[in-house]
Image (cartoon, rainbow, N blue to C red):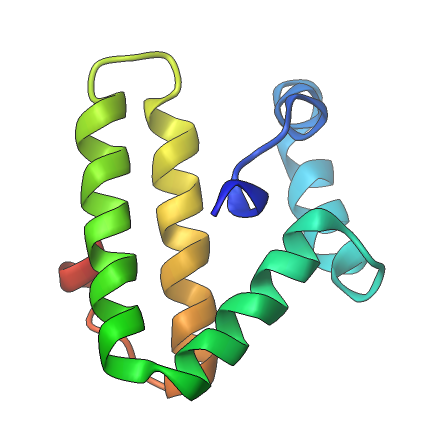
Length: 101
């Protein structure tokens, strides 16, 4: 889910002002964006294909974590994994984060 990743613009805003980044990220959740589209697709996939899609998400997160370990992009992958788990949690109302992180 590349749409769940942090963009260079997001990274720059975070470096300049972390509080503004969080505020902007939450306030802009109503406006169309690649991340919003990815979140909506994710919710639909969880609702339609719960068990296989949950396994896919878990495998995807593990793969991204392993491929980015020790790199400058490691934190970006962790943020994407957290966003992915949070979106699943919004649909399922509970998520065992230890399975995802």
